Length: 123
Image: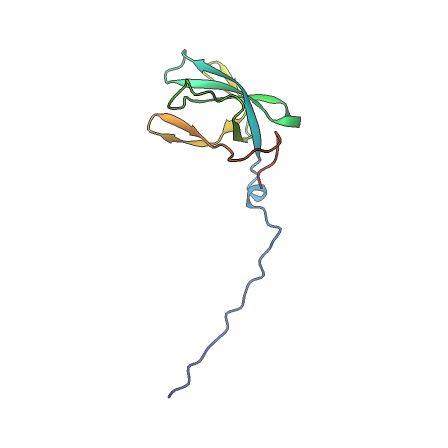
């Protein structure tokens, strides 16, 4: 039987302390929604959220309306991108970007399954 040549592939050392979010300059924090205001003066259904981010303070976010605006979002914990410039959306100030996705014409917010202190950094 012919001998099969086996060559070893060098194994790269894995960096255990690598944080791809930090490498990309992304700062995502846990925030708790404290107030929800439906915005009727914009071209598409939207809502303004006041979000408590702990030591970072309470910041506003304007986002598309969820599928059922009657669902109480108060005290829901959401993931927020906090190191983006503030912007004005239809005259409403938005300081942070709430992570989520669109399901048809409604927003689905990225929320926590458990709970964490406001301002906790996502790594």
